[in-house]
Image 1: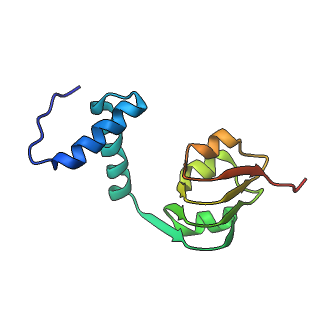
Image 2: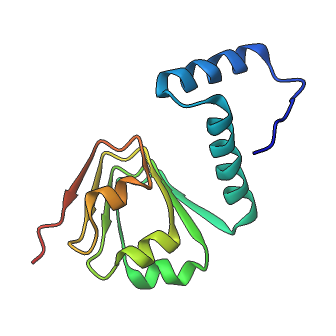
Length: 129
């Protein structure tokens, strides 16, 4: 681990950030490391965003056709098709943010999908057998 002194951080932002670290019971250094990691991942990889739809179903072919990681934002109902397994999902789905419902296939667990979710109301298994 490296000890760092950072100058020029806005007092208000730092106050809110340190309060959030305390709320999560996470040391500030660990939380800063997480934020830095997310920033680097988002800025060094090819990343696409799909947003603002009522409904969307994604398939294996569609994910593979993009050629990079994808963020899904503000999609009311996002359905992940049965042909998507964890390996593919993990490789291509960067995050799912601000969705009401995410419908997942049997090949994925709710906890796997939750690792990519922020502000999602519910995750349900698809009813396709």
